[in-house]
View 1 (cartoon, rainbow, N blue to C red):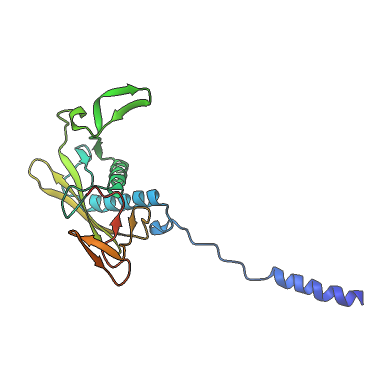
View 2: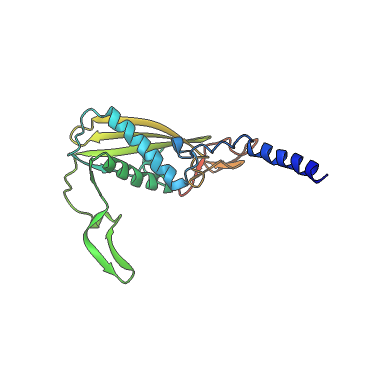
Length: 210
């Protein structure tokens, strides 16, 4: 009787050993899927710069270029956390392609304080004068219901000529820490509007400077 019990159990265990193996998960970094928010912005910046390099017809790698802060296309001066982080990513990506990137935010002198030693500034009066800049990288952003359209171009300061351009789009879900769906009740020009459901208007950009 003991042998009759052991044999079926042994066969059952052997059957479990030949079970179909579980397929390994697909890499999460393909096309930026699964990236944390900041890494996704860097991935987005790399995508933009790759397109700019492909479309470039004049800028040489030894010519100085400044990366400006992206602005909202509606007023050309509003900034936000997404724009400021994207600016940093674009600078890094351009440098990775060995372009001559100039940091516009370096002050004339080092500030030594009790809180630390600082050289970066946004005070135009403390910036270096007469920077040898020949080209600018400028970007505009346009919010839609499910994300942000971003247009980027490299412009020559000598004649305002566009020497390269790029268009891209990032969804709200990809950058949920920087963009949120619109509320059901939104304010436009001082008037409140109630939509049938949330998310029917433009996405709300966190940290918008308006």
